[in-house]
Amino acid sequence: GQQVMQIPQYQHVQEGEDFTTYCNSSTTLSNIQWYKQRPGGHPVFLIQLVKSGEVKKQKRLTFQFGEAKKNSSLHITATQTTDVGTYFCAERGSGNTGKLIFGQGTTLQVKP
Amino acid sequence: EAQVTQNPRYLITVTGKKLTVTCSQNMNHEYMSWYRQDPGLGLRQIYYSMNVEVTDKGDVPEGYKVSRKEKRNFPLILESPSPNQTSLYFCASSLFLSSEAFFGQGTRLTVV
Image (cartoon, helix red, strand yellow):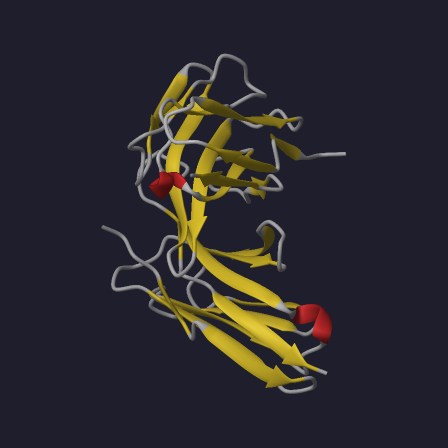
């Protein structure tokens, strides 16, 4: 079945350092969504990418969708302690299921 | 305020005692889903519903039931809970098949 692999599983950075998490699929993704889950919280939608090669920015966050639509990345510039949490990529599965297929998530710790 | 509301937030129960986790959304969304989140496994879909009286199995439906009698409500039923159903459960809704998902606050269930 469809799978989205996300790496790394954990990342510890010093405040001010950059951070990147990657999602990869063996099949072409129709779209990719990114969610953030704060410790003890629920996933919150960040962004959706649909087009090949698409790049979107939200302040210090940069989201990319690969040219072949088989990979995506989230890059955070100059991390802050408020960036702590788990970042998930997710694809809407094929067919009319409304299913979100989630990557395993990358948990980011930021040391002040 | 647009939201997805789950109850209860925390529940400890014994093996075999039927329980229901409620989920309600006030955004008139057609699509609703239940996910469970387990360490290292990300979020996995249990059941989904595309509209009133339309429900179908997700990836891990065994031991669960759902119903969708009204558009706003999508309860998750565990007829005979077992310890392997100890998990963090999230309800989610979205307006369209491809749009962002709004998640509830989560229900942490422990079955002893």
